[in-house]
Image (cartoon, rainbow, N blue to C red; front, side):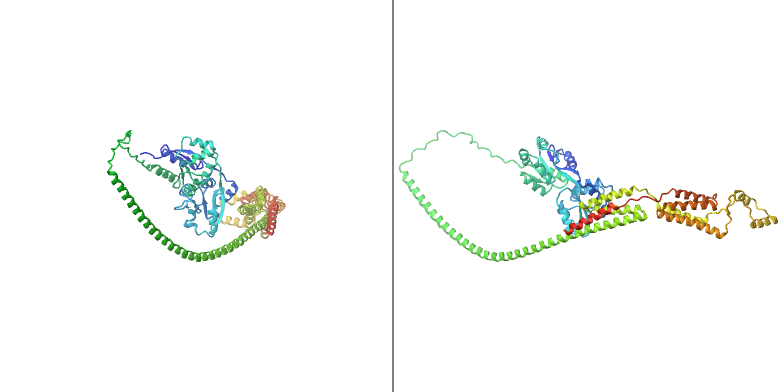
Length: 603
C-alpha cells in the first residue's frame, strides 16, 4: 500500500517539545519533518507565585489549562494532583495529556476546540461562587478570564511559562527550505507571525508561494494576511493533522485538458497560385445587378422593421422604468418613515449607552472602593494577628502557635500581589526564620511528667515501712505451727525490732506521713507552675527539694522510689527559661503598610 506522504517535506513551526510527537507521526508515514520551532518556551517569570498557587490547589473548584505546555509545566511541579479538582482544557490532545498526568476529572469542548468552544461547555455556565485558577503563558487573550468573571467566578490567572521569540535565524530557515517544501504546518498565529518576521523579502516571497496547513480558521486568516496564496485547513491534534495531510495528498490530481488533434490537411502548404475562374458572359451582369437591388430593398425593409420593434421595446421598457420609479418613490417614503423610527430608536439606544457608561463608571469606582476596603481589612487582620502572636509568645512562650499564625498570615498575603505588601512579607520571613532557630522545649511533656510524679507520691513506700532483706527472708521462712507459733506471731504483731541507719527520727504517725506526702506533692506542683512561667531558678529549687525529701523519708531501695528519683534527675536537666525573639519588625511593617494604604485612599 502506497503512502501519500512518502518523501514529502513539511516545515514544523511548533515549539520543540510539542513538535516531537507530530514529527514521529510524519516519519511513520514516510514524510520528512523539518523542525523550525517559531516559539521558544521558557520558565515562568514569577515562579514564587506559581509555587504558592500550586501549594493551595485544594482551595480551587476548577483548574483551566490553555495549552499542553501549561499542563507539562504545572505537572512537573506537582507531586500529586488533587482528585476532587476538576480540570478544563481546550482540545482532545490536551485532554489526553492531562489524563496521562494523573488528572481524573477532565472536561474539554465537544466540537469547537478553542476558548470559545470551552466556554460553551455546560459545566461552565453556572460559575457563581466558584474559585477558578487559570494556567497559561505570558500574554494571550483575556476571553476566558473575563467571561468566567462575568459569570460570577473568582479567577486567579497564573503564568505557568513564557513564550519567547525563536532562536532560529533567516539562514537556518532558508537552509531547511533549500531542498523543497511540500507544506508549512502552523498551529498558532504567533508562530506564523514569528516566521514571517525573521524572513527577508526573498524568503518571504518563497513562503508565500508555499502551501500552508492551519489547524484553526483564525490561524488561517493570520497566514492569509501575509499574502500566502494557498492555505488549507486541517483537523486539530497531531493525529488529526496527519489524517488531513493524507486526505489532501491522496486526492486525485485534475485530469489534463485534451488537446484536439490537428486535421490531416492542416500541415499541408497552400498552393502558390489558385485557379482563376473564366470570365462571365456579358448577359449575366443584368441579373446580378437586379439581385443586388432586391437584396438591398429586403435589407432596408428588415432594418425598418427592426427599428420599429426596437422603438416598441424601448417604449415598454421606458414605461416599466416609470412604474418602478413610482414604486421606488413610494418605497422611499416608507423608508423615510422607517428611517425616522430608526433614528428615534438609535437616539434611545445612545441614551441607554450613556446610562450604561455612567453605571460602569460607578461600578468601577465601587469596585475600587471595595478592593481598597479588602486591602485595608487584610492589613488590619495582619496587624491584629501579629499583635496576638507577639503577646502569646512573650506571655506563654508558645513558639509553635506563633509560627503557625505567621505561616497562615504569609499564605494570605501571598494571594495579593501588591508592591506595598512586599516589606511586610520580608519582615514575616525574617521573623519565621528567627522562631525556627529557637530550641524546642517540650513544656507539655515536662508538665505531664510532673503531674504523674505528684500522683504517684501516695504509693511510694516510706523508710519506716521498709524491711531489710534479712527480715523479708525471715518472714518468708516456714511458718511455725502449734501453740508456741501462734504465741510468737501474736507477740511479733505487738513489738517490732528494726535497725535504722539514719540519725533523724523516722517513726511517723499516720497524720505526719500524710503531711509529708502532701509536702512532696506541693514541691512537684510548684515546680510545674515554675516551668509554665519559665521561672528556671524556682523550678530547679523545687525539684532539688523534692529529691531531698524523697531520699530522706522514703525507701530509696524500692523500685518506684528509684524510678521517681531518675525522672527527677531528667527533669533537672531541662532549661525552661529561653530568650525568645520579638515580632516587632513584622508588627511595624504591618502598621506602615496600613498607614500608606490609608494615605493613598484619602488621596
